[in-house]
Length: 409
Image (tube, rainbow, N blue to C red):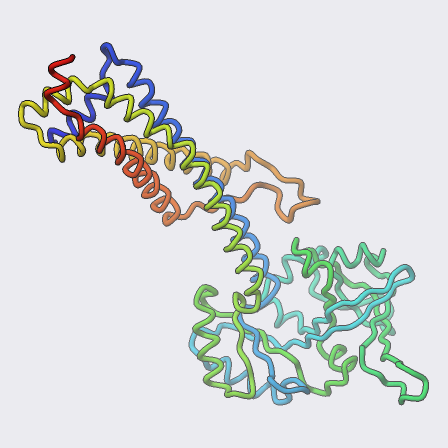
């Protein structure tokens, strides 16, 4: 242990005349503790929401979406699918028809997105079976004259329909011949299932129907618009997407789930770091009392400093004494803060102490995702702040004149 560190530590643990300085030191450590704990918890909550959104997006869509760059969809989709299945990292594929449409009930008409799927294939690339309230992967209806469809729960509520209610779906393609104005193709349907993902984008807009009926509605023949792909590791889906694009050629695009939702994740990342910067400003303001504490320490210990300098302690070593004090405050406060923040986060993660109204949010408890990188970053910032705020008091202490101190005190 260096002399400078030993003296810095003794100044904090002094219980004699300047015992109040030890109290101020404890308060400074407490401020850093609360700041770092709060910062870690807020970052972990933001991470938790990001993770929840990511998991639900991956649950409702595949890791990679392959589509044609030209109109008419993917005509030879079976051949393209075989090529995709041969790419390393691909575990499952499913053909899909994606198209905009309109839907109407007795009470409401609205625009929707149709997803024509093969249920048994779709469950291999997404978690659609988990989100079906009926948990029945069937489009069967009591009346075979109607096509069975699944509606997002918010869409069903808006249309005021439930299981076995009749609705109509319209293609937005004109089939009227041009003399009678716009005449869309109409398909009579019946609600066979309700889907609840917790994501308003999907629950508000998506309608699922059999693949062949979607092909018929949009007059695609045997073509599909998209081939969904599931990979062994969704984190590296972008690499697989790149390999797929190289394999199937320039006629097709391969977009991974993160790129497909680029705007959403960019916004969430920006929000997270803006929140981090705002909290850091509060941390800096709260931790500024470190300067006041160390200046008071310099004034209270000026006689000791004068004696040490008279005995040969250099100005640089005096600086290091107070720099060590700043580092002690930052380190101890930071370590205690991230420790308490981590413990509180783990308690929330395991026991869901703070609940959320599930009718407003898509989750029932405050999500927590504590990441080691955040702990390291926050701890490093706490130590850095302690050091930076010790620079001015350290310089002030090193400029004291030992002769004047000893003469007048």
